Length: 282
Image 1: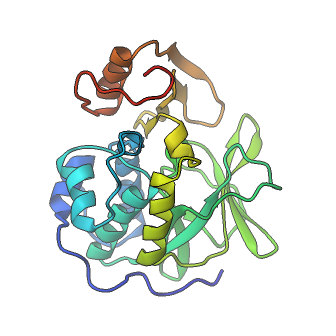
Image 2: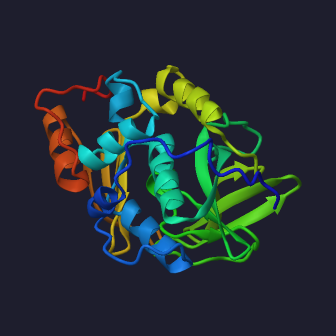
C-alpha cells in the first residue's frame, strides 16, 4: 500500500503538553515508539476522550490549531470528532518519535456502496519496522481501540470488535464484524491529508447544514471493560463491544435535563444548565 511519507506539515506547533495528555487518558507506561506503547495509547485515548459534536450544534466553530485542540480535549476535558481527535494523536505520536502519515477517508457506516460520501475523515498511518498500522481514534462509536495492520486482509482482534482491512480495486475498506457479518467503517485510497485539506473538510463538516454533525446529537466512548456507551439523538445505549451487539442498558432521553445528566455521568462532559442543542426537543 503506497502512501505519502510526509507525516507532518512542518515542525510541531506550539501548545502540546504530552504529559498532560497522558494524564488526561490515564496512561502511565513507557514513552518508547513501539507497537506495545501504540496499542496502549490508542486504548487509553479511546476510553478517555469521547467522540462528540456538541460544539458544532452550538455553532461555536471547530478550531484545528494544535493549541486549541489541546486546550479543548486535554485542559477542558472535552471530546471532539476526527480532525480534533486524530490531529491531537498525530502530534503526540510524532513527539514520541513515531513515523505518522495523516490519511483521508470516506466514512461508510450505514451507507450503501453505490452512495459516495464526502472525503471528510482523517485517520493515521503509523509505520513500525516496515509495517503500516491504521490508527483511528475518531470514527465515533466504532473507533478501533487498537491499531490495525494495513498489509493483510486477515481478521484482526482488538480490545473490542474484530476488524479487517480488505482491498477492492484501488480502494481499501476498513471493516468491523458486527452480528456475524462484516460492515464497512470507511474507505480510503492511501492519499495523504495535509493540514490544508483537513481545514477545508473540517469547515464543510462543521458548517454545512447537510452535514450529519448538524443533524444529530452524538457522543460515544469505549470502556476498558470491553463495552461501549453512546448517545444518538434521544437514545442512550450501553452495549457489549465484542461485535455481538448485546445491549446491556438503554434509555430514551426525554428532555434536555436528562441529556445533560447522561453527558456528565457517562462521558465526563460538563454542560451548563439550560443548554439546548436545538434537535429533538433537546
